[in-house]
Image (cartoon, rainbow, N blue to C red):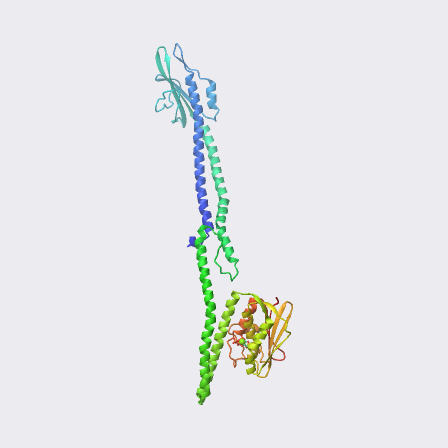
Length: 458
Ligand SMILES: Nc1ncnc2c1ncn2[C@@H]1O[C@H](COP(=O)(O)OP(=O)(O)OP(=O)(O)O)[C@@H](O)[C@H]1O
Ligand SMILES: [Mg+2]
């Protein structure tokens, strides 16, 4: 569980460090072993040279063999450390000088080439070099064996010093490996971070496949991501079609039911049935209104996610909405007037979103106004904004705040007689937020309500 969710970087660094530690220990032992061998070989060479030199100086005389132990021979050996020296010279089968208990080689050397061996002697271990030669004494050849032994304190000291160096080397190697493995672990994850950055930088509308160059190992991830993106693109375009089709498919049968119910209402004389039919018509009206507002709301949410910014003349848009509401206003005997000059009110945005917001404001103004009143749409621009102000002489907000009324499905306490779903102002505030505008709904001192909507001037 920890390994699955933990940091890959930490795992990689840990693995690299374990490898580095193993290598450091190996390095230590290799250096130490090699140094030991080298020190021993050097010591052996000196020891062997000294032994050979002693053997070469043996001379046959008339009385026997003359032994000349030159001081220089031993000083050469004494030069290394505090080591003790032991020697033994055997002529024939008897020791003629030196320590006669100095251990003999396992095999008697056959020439002046030195034989080396390590043997315990007295309280310590010594390294012994042995050579042999034959000397003719009188008429008969006599075998001579020369051995020189030396304690190994000097070599041990050298080996100890070298071991310290090796340990330092190993430790240094490991210490160097720490930042290097951190660095390399970081660089391995750079392509992943760059890919994440490239995907994160994309705008909400950018649903193209990811073409960012990545290492081969990331190809499955990128392929999965691209598969996901293309499924999302498919789902979104399906949603768009669905919203359009659903609106049509819900509204059409509802309007049939409504027409049928109205015909039945006209034909019926029974008061109880008429009451039922009226409440049925109202229910159908409410359903139709809810369906159409819900779908409008879905459309607004979808389109604000995929904002398509084009130049829109808000003045023209307001006049279009006013014209579309002309029949509704006439039916209620409300006079709908547009004030302000004919200059364009240029802004940038999605024309469908702007129209949906304006439609809901004019709809509310007419809907919540009594008959034979005036609804006024005033167009203006200033302070870098283009503004539409929709004022009515209706019932007002009876104290409810704009924030409250703009919530989803929230309706005022004074509107139960009017059909509505409580989504109109939600749609307006969402459009305003998506396009970076301002919205204010205020009750006028003289009665009635004013809705102010402004968008940045383009
Ligand atoms: N011009 C207005 N005059 C009086 N009250 C208003 C006006 N505009 C909005 N309101 C109040 O704000 C509430 C919320 O308005 P909103 O447009 O969101 O919903 P609705 O009109 O009730 O339903 P629908 O979603 O069908 O438009 C309304 O129920 C009403 O109480
Ligand atoms: Mg409304």
